[in-house]
Length: 169
Image 1 (cartoon, rainbow, N blue to C red):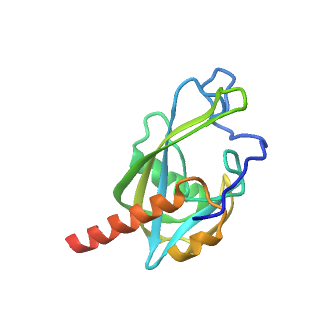
Image 2: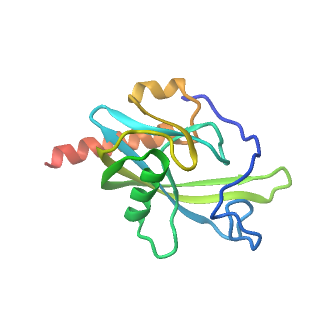
């Protein structure tokens, strides 16, 4: 299991931060997001988060779905914004959720995240908008990283899904 991360309560994201309760922190309703588990041969892509929640933790690239945007388009856009690469979306791996309460019991964050399996198409990996680092890793390297909650389990599901897709070909 990977090393856990702690929050340092720094400034929050740009587009989703609103005073009307529709922002990322203390939302009125769950936020829909995507994550991309992008493989290039035996390696997969992670970004180190530059924003809360889980600032400085390694995570799959991803982020919020914009109004009117398809999940696939959101996944491709987020991958480009966070690490400057292109991918081909292969399949939905699973739906995850992240709910964090503050010390008074109020919901600070609530995300529903569609995790997609993808194949690398091109581009030079470099940190983008909300990330402070981006890099390729082999699955056995995850245990040495500070990762977001559930990353290892989702990676295992993606590896199984990837193998099943190869067997179908």
